[in-house]
Length: 116
Length: 114
Image 1 (cartoon, rainbow over the protein chains, first blue to last red):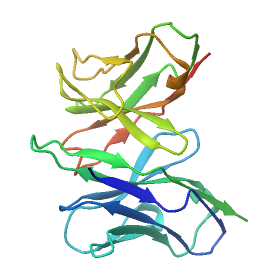
Image 2 (image 1 turned 30 degrees about the vertical axis):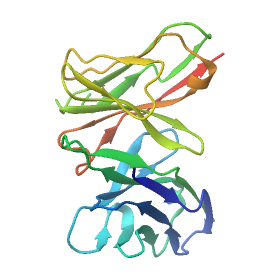
Image 3 (image 1 turned 30 degrees about the horizontal axis):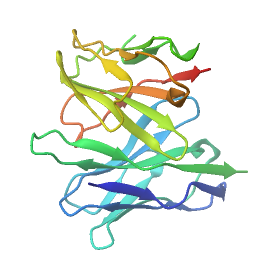
Image 4 (image 1 turned 45 degrees about the horizontal axis):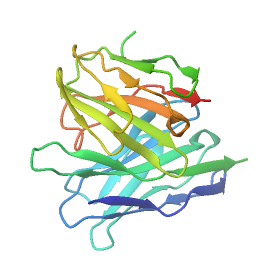
């Protein structure tokens, strides 16, 4: 079965500093990869996704992620964070099934805390 | 209002009681999902539905029941609530294959079982 590991449960960072949130997955087949963000007291919303093509994916709010097949990683980056980026970030991988429905498997989440 | 809504937003109940969490979406999306969010576990899929009258178990279905008689509604029932079911519950929907396309999440229901 596929799994997703988010290596850091919490990442503190100062405003305007760069940040990287790490995500590794296990899979023996092709995967689709996602990053979702959850702002306080809200549901999740999609930041970006990788389905195929260019391994560098750009998302909303200045975030980007790079798919590395050999490292089975999909790390999320932002060159300069704002206070408003304080949120929980979830990496997710889709799991294929013979019936054609691809379930989404979520990591445990990384809490990004941006300090002034 | 357009979108996906959940009710109630907060609920406190006692062990052994039956509780139903409601989910309504206005987009006519085919797929709907129920997740629970617990610290250290991220989101875990409870049940999902690919269309009206089609439902299937996810990763943690025990103690939960779902139904989907209409495309827009997907209620989740805890038949006899237990303390281990204290959690934040999220409903989501997706127009197409959720493994490839965006899932849209509701605001969540915070359930406390005493």
